[in-house]
Length: 406
Picture 1: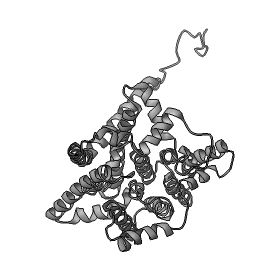
Picture 2: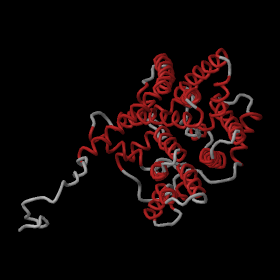
Picture 3: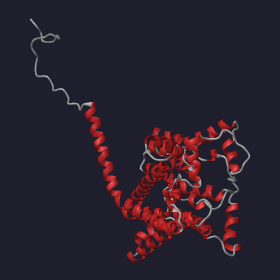
């Protein structure tokens, strides 16, 4: 007689428990993707007013530039796509980096970080048009990602109204036209903004990865790395987190990898810094900055308008940093903008691009955005209109009248 316990038993000893229902792996992944897409649409819908405001500011500036360039019989596309630093990046995408240090000043392309020209080269293979067109499209696309990241940081800290105002003010900076040129500022700001947002929301691995990418984009990527690493290490005092520790180690990796690679390429440990010396970018603690400020504001009887704008931008940025510290901004924002200011103000290099170098420092605008959010509608309208028109004029002047790089 069968006991019912064998594998070939013909009868059962009783009702068997139902097998647990399991979601097939492919279905599980599809559900995760759908949830991620839904969350992305929600975030994008929330940021839509800020992105529309950003586009409006940039289009007004572009229209004025087109009109002014038409009067002067200039073509706008070359001004935006392949002049000054854009030409250096396009040269790297086309021919790669030099193998030698050399002795010529302002002539070694190893001073320019690799991620942007690498993207230009890679995307150009898959798309029609020239590399210059590809680079410009990448910069414009990155500028919208940057504006979205700026909004995300502002919204997380102070809500939607402040976030929209912050995005508008970032778009309307005097050198805001650079956001739609073949430069790295838009791409770098996108990485910086989303890295800071990731830190503020506790997404440590994202923060470390984005900081590493920023370190492959611009020398000032070390400011993003400092913000992520310091915040991550301090968080370990409250609670140990392997992800925070990994972010602290990963954040400076991009910057260190490129600087180390330049050293290996040139056969000397200080290769990258030797290149920077050929570009006159040596640290002098701010002596050259103060000298040029004094010259523009006190010695020149008729200083260049663009240099006046640069000087005022530097002075206002320092004041805004003091206000940011007074407002007790979160530590990662203060570290990022503080290190960025130290690098820009402490360099003995060329003076005129320094307003552009500060363009990624959008947290400096938070005190202004907060003030405008509390101001009367009339004052806010007048202030934003003035910022919009001033940005449009300065941008056109920067590329049509000022004879050097922005």
